[in-house]
Image (cartoon, rainbow, N blue to C red):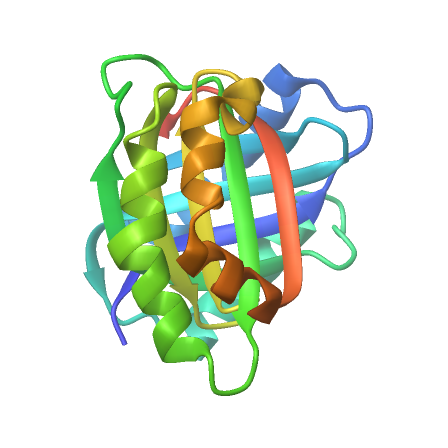
Length: 203
């Protein structure tokens, strides 16, 4: 299994953006030279924190390696109860209609397919849904990963210029197709989260 990125999920309290970025930058070296960049995303209406570690090149990351890094991050964050580190395999990537703009928000949809629906759901995502949303004005970048650890298994993320991009006619038209109406009832364990994006942190 090729791992393209690592995703640290945790929750934060009243810590400020600058202090949080410095705290995580202090421990990103624990992942070693394979980490190229780290980007931070804080929930708009929640205390969720997603730290996304992009690897220099895809490759195998063993269970022991990911669990060791998970413990190091949790210790540096003061325990971080319930925090997890997941290995992500990139299966779709497309520059968006607004690729020249800087993204300020990060929208994530995580889901498991109902039994027997995995193949068709993944075709829908990769052939219709992700390309259509990427082409919507205000979308900077669209990516989808497979989560090989804590799940849900499908993680679709969209870098956006504003949170209301998801309410525009172009975006809603993609969500309203016949294929979408067939697939969406087959979502299970679904999480939809809008994040504010903090500045990417290079190693």
